[in-house]
Length: 229
View (cartoon, rainbow, N blue to C red):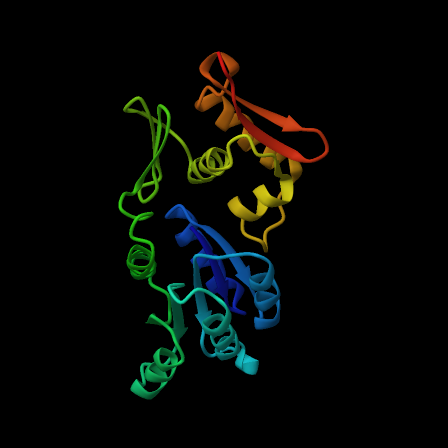
């Protein structure tokens, strides 16, 4: 699922990114409400997470716009450093579905996000397993199996493999891959991505004789293709 996070604290957004990515989600980070609103007008997201106490009243503005313009089932979770009943009521009254009191606790965030997504999209969250032919991705545990046999992957390799399969036969730019698998505020050398792609190709045996080809797209990125044998 695609989740947009509004928070101006890089440390906190980094934690949220790791937690959500480990759960199999694509996480987009925004440091201010203006940038988030611009993106919400162009792209769709399955959930919003808003820091309610940012300067400039960013979160309430985003909340109001989202509830006016976006589907009503879109789940919204807000973060607050205050346990005051008045502050919590304010966020819920504005249209949020749930809240968390900072600091972020890893297990709590994962559970709350999953509960909100399951409630909003019951048909898409009925199972934690996503299958593509012989490959079975277990999104919560970050495990991949081929015909029942586990394939040893790092979390980044798992995220990368799932990204390719979810976009089968579609070319993905390097920028798209970088955004989906690595945090926005981290610059990685080009060879780092190429190394991870090479490992995914090797570990999953993505070769034409096995029905798939993971190939570079010149001056653009990569594409996972299904090959007819």
